[in-house]
Length: 291
Ligand SMILES: [Zn+2]
Image 1 (cartoon, rainbow, N blue to C red):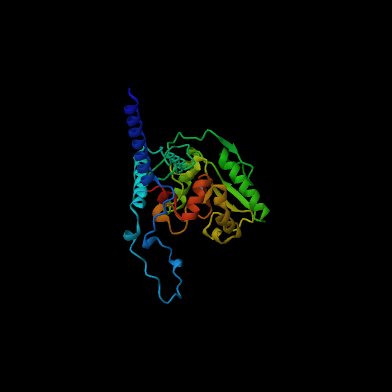
Image 2 (cartoon, protein in one colour; image 1 turned 45 degrees about the horizontal axis):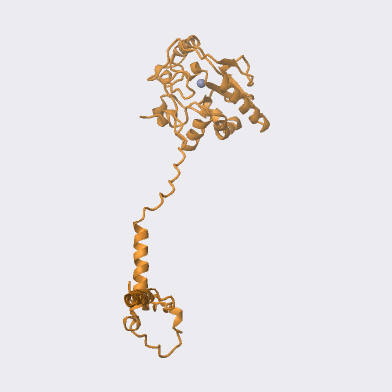
């Protein structure tokens, strides 16, 4: 190449580079002042409240140089692109701990502590609890109960004793045969209307479950009579028996529901959870387990 053409070629290259630099300066001038904030973004405090004549603000469009518009546009574009990018997966919400299942009581199984027994829901004549034990709770005769019922009854007797209350265990487990003998005795003694609401029917007595007791006062006043409910022993039982899993099973005013006459001496072991629920709600087992 001749020197003349080589010079022209270099000159064209230099001019092109200068042109590009000029364009770059126009678009990315780092010394360009920041764009004036919009009227609405201006902090309220910037205008003193006592200022009598606030300065007139000039329209934003008139003072904004072209370059000032370009940079926010580029920033907006960058921002939009960033928005298009796949966002990182948000941390998955931890699955909630499965709440404890509501306590479910089996009111039908013969060996359930919550077995609901009545003349409508009798128990088989052959049923005998497998875990009967002789209880050490104070009684005149040897009395038997299912193991847990016996343990909780003994704890209750100890607590009552500590409070100066002298409980007496009158009756605990009764086999079907014993229950039938009792029923035959009652039939001789009471009218049929009285018998109808007595807890004496073979196959329908909680005593056959090994989960029921008749309680009394060691002073022997009013035992197995309605006036038992005015003794301090009865008051103590109404306040504390539920803490040991025992409930007053045939309360006053509930004969239409339970089918059994008011029996303030008859207590039933249902376990501490259900005893608390029944105590707090005031419901009978029939009401609690109503369909
Ligand atoms: Zn009883």
